[in-house]
Image (cartoon, rainbow, N blue to C red):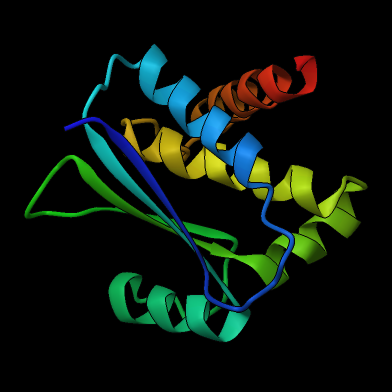
Amino acid sequence: MAIEINIFDEGDFGIIPEIETNQIVKSILTDYKIADAIINLIYVDDEEIHRVNLEYLKHDYPTDVITFVLEDDSTEVDIFIGVETAIQNSIEFGVTKESELLRLVAHGVLHAVGMDDQTDEERLSMHNMENKYLGIINEK
């Protein structure tokens, strides 16, 4: 097997930066020495991510990103990205929609490789790692 990255634009948003997304995913997996993985990036609207969040995590609200490492195969990961929430975040944080989507890709993949963001210290570390991988894109 190798690294397989699947992008599903479920809402036909048409704003998914595919080349940069692939670069970020491959960079993180390379840094964490993961040579075999299937990463499914599923871009959905707020209604769908709300449904997923409620059904699987018992959180009754839409969110920006949810990562699932599939139990049957620890090398397969589903990352749901709430595009409408991401767009709202991009406005709030004063960044482009594409930049916010790429941050969420990095965030989701970092969760998949074992990072967490439950404490202030973990959130800071996660944010710094997101910036590192966004920086790789900005260098090119």
